[in-house]
Length: 555
Ligand SMILES: Cc1cc2nc3c(=O)[nH]c(=O)nc-3n(C[C@H](O)[C@H](O)[C@H](O)COP(=O)(O)OP(=O)(O)OC[C@H]3O[C@@H](n4cnc5c(N)ncnc54)[C@H](O)[C@@H]3O)c2cc1C
Image (cartoon, rainbow, N blue to C red; front, side, top):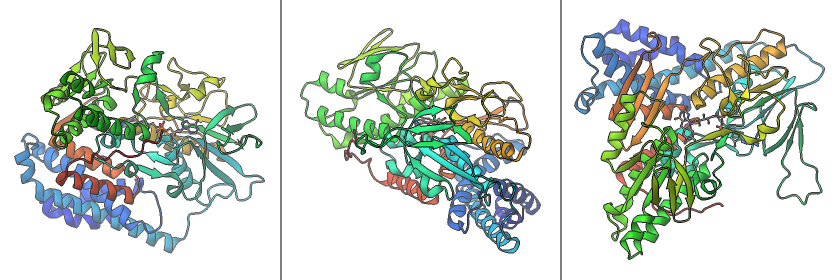
């Protein structure tokens, strides 16, 4: 509250009303400090996070809410937004000061008051072992929240097992495939982000619910003489995410690129450059067109963002290939329904399609990809000759869960109770993309998104602590904040939930939505260093052409 009030100094000229500035400053300050993860002396990190938050606040308050309150329409045309630029400076300054002051006050209170009193019983006979499987949004956030809540609790150990050693920030994955961002800049190392969790880089191979242990895959480097490592647990959190689901179509699985991991994005980028190189030395125009046809299956967020990014990338690098022409190039998005982006309202989805079409993307709606071979892709209503198919049209929960003797839904996701534990299995929790979670208030199924995975993680951590302390558990309820989707350079669609108006949402598109997308996701990207790296990549992208260096293909 104090930090918000102090930082509101920067808002006075922006909002033009000192009292309003202080009230708003305090309200945001309370929210900010409540969501702050206490870590010692993280001044620069908080400064950057707060400053990045200033961008969406500028959009929501200065560009939309204030004009609406004064009886005008929202001012998000390019000219109007230029007029509001001084306000943007004020908001960013306010955010930066808020971050700085909040961290300062946290440090002061820790110094004066000392560490918080211990929450659990002082000397339990044996350490309770909490094991988390999966280092994605759900697993990582569960570990972070448990660390916060069990700060001084030495009688509990936390272990995180993941087959990758970094948290992948998937909302920015399309930008890696489109060569806007360096791959490692959107991955945050798990080891350095967690301070009291034991991190094990390994693949869970078997989960033995009876014996309460997890068996890891044997180390590839070992000669087989050593038995695989076993990890016993008292509480087990399953946050193993999902994999691509090819719906039994083996040829598609064989020929298509996945688009889920960092390696997938690197491979897609390298492959696109490879196609340009080959097309450049191809004399036959028909073959050139085949090489430069890129097909993406699936018109959800991942597919649309990838199509937009690849289209920009392909058009952007044409200048480096003097033998190739715009007409040779084709990015095709195949989608089984009559409109893309089912997660957004129809008007925004249409807007996205029109903008993408005007930039050269072709849409094949009401069409399914049914087969693939070396020379192309077979559709329900024809064929496309291509060397590139990326599959984003289906996902299924992690296959390792198939063998568990617990209830699953028809997708294979683990059915959990409203408290996110599995019925009949004390100490077993599941969340994120691998779980079928139903909202406790609305009884609606929760979508498999990072937004929900992060909130579920907070409840799982609280409920584990509650179970250890014999307190009642919380029910999971969360109202989506909305959805954002980039459809190409400097263009995005956003649909934000209005908290005080039931089933109402605010819709934005174009440059304004794109700025919101960048501001919001930059503030959510974990770690100051990553934020700076991504900001630098975005700045470089403004002045220089996309990089066409082929990087090492790890497979
Ligand atoms: C391209 C793309 C863009 C997206 N954009 C958005 C977006 O803008 N907004 C949004 O809200 N959501 C978005 N999503 C969805 C979001 O990424 C997922 O909902 C979210 O990652 C789910 O979190 P999770 O922790 O359940 O799974 P994941 O993040 O997939 O994490 C699973 C973890 O488990 C590990 N793992 C898997 N198997 C094993 C094993 N056997 N042993 C050990 N570890 C294992 C994996 O390495 C990984 O670390 C996007 C997804 C994609 C693919």
